[in-house]
Length: 537
Ligand SMILES: *[C@@H]1O[C@H](CO)[C@@H](O)[C@H](O)[C@H]1NC(C)=O
Ligand SMILES: *[C@@H]1O[C@H](CO)[C@@H](O)[C@H](O)[C@H]1NC(C)=O
Ligand SMILES: *[C@@H]1O[C@H](CO)[C@@H](O)[C@H](O)[C@H]1NC(C)=O
Ligand SMILES: *[C@@H]1O[C@H](CO)[C@@H](O)[C@H](O)[C@H]1NC(C)=O
Ligand SMILES: *[C@@H]1O[C@H](CO)[C@@H](O)[C@H](O)[C@H]1NC(C)=O
Ligand SMILES: *[C@@H]1O[C@H](CO)[C@@H](O)[C@H](O)[C@H]1NC(C)=O
Ligand SMILES: *[C@@H]1O[C@H](CO)[C@@H](O)[C@H](O)[C@H]1NC(C)=O
Ligand SMILES: *[C@@H]1O[C@H](CO)[C@@H](O)[C@H](O)[C@H]1NC(C)=O
Ligand SMILES: *[C@@H]1O[C@H](CO)[C@@H](O)[C@H](O)[C@H]1NC(C)=O
Ligand SMILES: *[C@@H]1O[C@H](CO)[C@@H](O)[C@H](O)[C@H]1NC(C)=O
Ligand SMILES: *[C@@H]1O[C@H](CO)[C@@H](O)[C@H](O)[C@H]1NC(C)=O
Picture 1 (cartoon, helix red, strand yellow):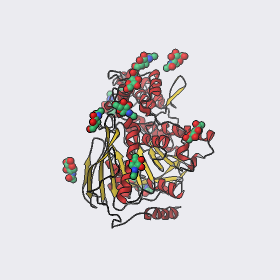
Picture 2 (cartoon, rainbow, N blue to C red):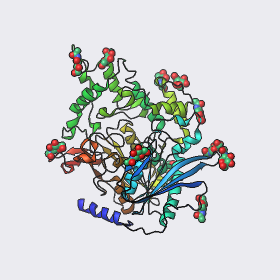
Picture 3 (cartoon, rainbow, N blue to C red):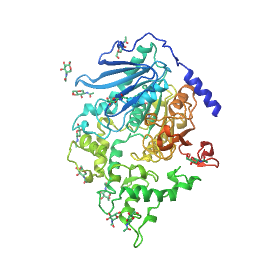
Picture 4 (cartoon, rainbow, N blue to C red):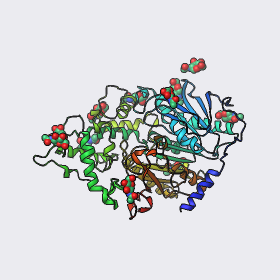
């Protein structure tokens, strides 16, 4: 297996790669786009290998001198000619091109070109990369641009800017290199995951292979769930309020005591939170016990809600739960701030057009209203993905999620995968394993980070100083999608690294397999820092 994948990686990255000299005539700084109604080139910058690349916007930034030579093309794309709505999009074109196109997604409500992944995931691996600002400029937690009634902006954020940018990027690649990209790939997490699923569902021709992490693809339910989760403990100082130090010092420790060793090894990483029925009542305060080391009944009740099987109202499934193990990463409401701003903005600016709406009044009718409205059809929950995966199209999806995701319940990833599985099994003759695989990452938070092995080439990971161990498909999810699409070799597992303190410069702490759902990691014996001591069962 090791030898085979190593050879496969060589074949993969040898193919089409032009090392050293450029094999085409186009020059970067004078690049123009023919036949380009509604598209203008607004910048073209040539970087030599090792040049400082220092680009910042409100969503993403990169400051490095480690990239190979490339050409940065900045474009302004008209997305609605009637309203003169535009999006800023960039295409980064490496000299040592591997012949492929890799598009990237965004995060939260962020509006800004994903320059970090363009550098650390596209150019550094030989792909021609593309990312768009989705038509607006904002930080990830700011959704105020969505309204009231800014439908054009919501449409661009939802699908239009990305879809149009894919077409333009393919044209730029064709003109710059003098030949089209061999295949088109996509990498994105969170909102980027939603964008990837949207492409597979609605624009099946855009990409051949899609890699998505923890997708925010069910906006109407996700945002309601975020608020619901936070309201379990809010307001600060209420009987049910749980101070941050209880989460990290007391609750997380008890979670580990109950759940950690179930995989055969007490190492601080829970391999399968589904296997653990966490019982918070063991933390109930006894008479005279110091309350900073135990929980009162209101707090225990809140924990039951947060870890309950799922958030439901009158037997109606709304969203997945948090699973035991993510406590140290919890943010916003759970750790002392107001409800997640993204969630509040979603209802105020996208759904209700009422900036005075009070999140503590969240009710299920509002979820139903949001479901019906689904502004600009931002929910990407279609379970019929036949058009993307049928043999004539042959699209592939690799989906991963951290079991310790602190922002989107990992249950959402399981739910989407299972609903696609159920639909496709009943309505088509295709076997889901042939086109869509889900991988669960123990101890990983949203996008990256956490305390499990979390570096395997996913979105934002290399940019966060946790690059994959190699370009081998077993270590690198982008190589894996290429291998699956082009060679028909589907990934069964990955091997990820945990770098000390999640910093590559501090060395590798340990390596672990990442298993294909529903399998999970178990310890077989041997060096606990070496992935070969573990198996997927
Ligand atoms: C120019 O672009 C239009 C619209 O994208 C397309 O239909 C047409 O085929 C293109 N023409 C050429 C010569 O590329
Ligand atoms: C990158 O740009 C920022 C401001 O745009 C500047 O403060 C910083 O010093 C630059 N970095 C380097 C290494 O020059
Ligand atoms: C484009 O903008 C016009 C004018 O604001 C608007 O009426 C129309 O609905 C928009 N079209 C789309 C497809 O967004
Ligand atoms: C869009 O831009 C064109 C050309 O600049 C202009 O004629 C038109 O009035 C603008 N339309 C809107 C809705 O701003
Ligand atoms: C908010 O505005 C959108 C259009 O911008 C509309 O579809 C929606 O129904 C409005 N919400 C309410 C509660 O009126
Ligand atoms: C529960 O404990 C918290 C402190 O951990 C306290 O603020 C709250 O008042 C207590 N609630 C009850 C009902 O005792
Ligand atoms: C309770 O425990 C905390 C943390 O261990 C300590 O700071 C505090 O002084 C203790 N309170 C009492 C009343 O012992
Ligand atoms: C639910 O919330 C919406 C929006 O705030 C409100 O208009 C509606 O009256 C509420 N419904 C119920 C049953 O409380
Ligand atoms: C849940 O069911 C109860 C009893 O039928 C009903 O009174 C209540 O309105 C329902 N709540 C929602 C949110 O549908
Ligand atoms: C699923 O999608 C395919 C391709 O778009 C379509 O032909 C088929 O009718 C759909 N199946 C169902 C059950 O809706
Ligand atoms: C595993 O790694 C940790 C942290 O680097 C180290 O302390 C420990 O000795 C290692 N264990 C083995 C068996 O190598």
